[in-house]
Image 1 (cartoon, rainbow, N blue to C red):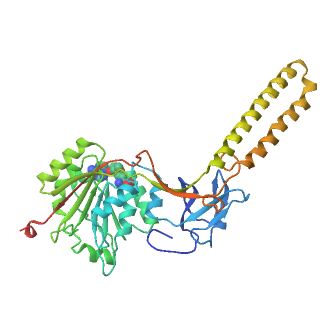
Image 2 (image 1 turned 120 degrees about the vertical axis):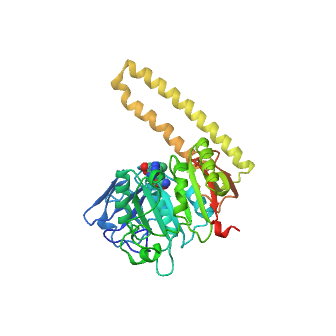
Image 3 (image 1 turned 30 degrees about the vertical axis):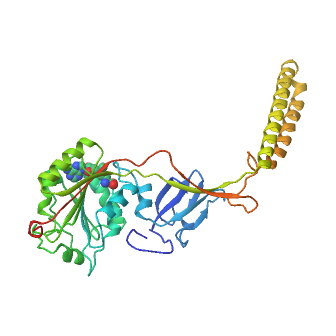
Length: 381
Ligand code: SAM
């Protein structure tokens, strides 16, 4: 399984995203003799081979479990090894729709960083006999470039959907001179192999500290057929101001800055409690309080006796401990609204109200997004 195909059953060599808990995924490459060791137990890969993607498997001890999920750009973003700050799904999904990305888009992404956004871009484009979509990704940091290269290759994206180039785009621009030997890519680049390629870029995404240095180089690579669109991702407003000045002096128009502030909206059922329930709840609180006072008195008495005659008191103290527990147990089963008996949400024996709630905090702001577009001069009249 890679990011490039759909598959139903897990085989050796596949990438699986093991779901350990809500915020904890672990990417694993299946090897027949390997093990996934987690705090929930040990999961031999041999048990995963032949399982359907999405299945749940138990640990060797039978006490823990994980789900075996197929890789998607969204899950990869949550589980990838971080080499840099990354773009998260609330931003990347908005940017992709706002830049009008389609299977035929020819996208520049700089820098590649940890490759989070590269995977989302790569899913959108198609490069075959009918579609000319490609992602041109640039990274100037040697180690990050090499790591991204290995990762894209193992995900079957390199030189297929993504052309990765080791280059400083602010100093040297965006030309790609060494295109890989690949039939579809040859068709897609539409030019000769001596550096005079026509990249015909339609979409640009700049996640760089100084996008204003890269913007003047774009004219050489953007399409002359129709408008090109750009998004610059910058954490500070001062960077946004400088970017806007560079965009405007390079004749980019319709400049607009937005900020994605996503909040999760939760919907669930709330139990409707009637007056009898409330009375029972109050009685339960009272009962627990009395038990607590009783327990405290017994504890103090035990402590006193303990200091005068330790041996004699040992069995009594055990007895003393048991009694309130029994009492508490009874109380626990009594009131479904307090601690104790768990009622499943939606249980037909109770009345429920459908409610929605918004998260109070915004967690997703990472950067400001500056959008603009440019129409070729021959088309603008
Ligand atoms: N968007 C990426 C992701 O989602 O994983 C993260 C990009 S990271 C914040 C910025 C990257 O740009 C860094 O890896 C850095 O090395 C690279 N970079 C910075 N200046 C560059 C330049 N002039 N040319 C190429 N890459 C550059």
